[in-house]
Image (cartoon, rainbow, N blue to C red):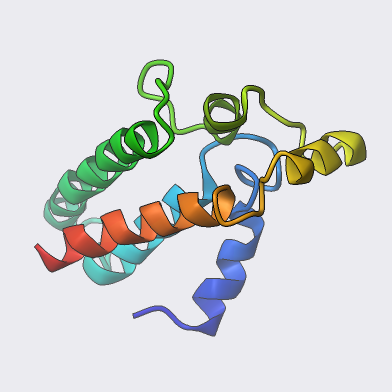
Length: 133
């Protein structure tokens, strides 16, 4: 499942889609994996569309719950926005396209084992567990 082309396509999801702070790229990557495994092959296949959406919703929910538990934080509403995750984890969101903010993000541990790589691992594990079930 997946290949180099999928990996390359996911590159631009980092930082909440092109570093814009939107939906967490790790979650989007996890959902892409689900789509590769169980997504529809034809636009008109609404049954497969609905069937794929159920585990997708569970993945998004579990991802949010596990982020809150792992980082002992509360996320506002049902958010999975990168900027909201950053604020919950680091105490503030960062403009990843601003060099000073990006530097501050790195200094806060954004790319450490307790930062985004951990968030990516949570997303991958949640998706993997859903696919196995």
